[in-house]
Image (tube, rainbow, N blue to C red; front, top):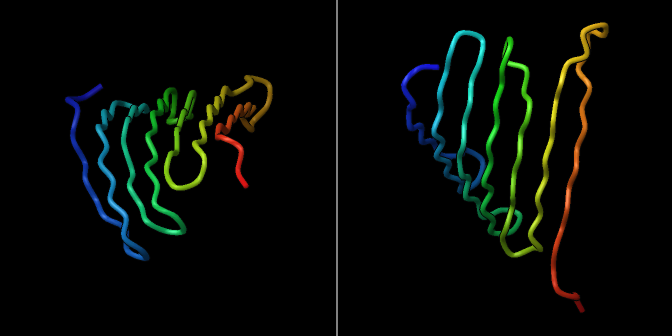
Length: 100
């Protein structure tokens, strides 16, 4: 992996800003970051991912919090050698107090 870089950008279609710490190597990448947005409701998305062996993402996690109830997802992509397309497995949770 190379020296980590800090990357910052803004959205074009609505107010949105994102910052990520990215490491790029020969056929692999890792990143952790945070996105802030206001539409459709104000939110914060924190994520982490690793793309190894030809940039295949395995694993990727994200947690979204904001005006709606918090949500967390974990997605794992692990290629199966005998099959060209990767196998995806996703686990998502949502937590909140009772809503009226």
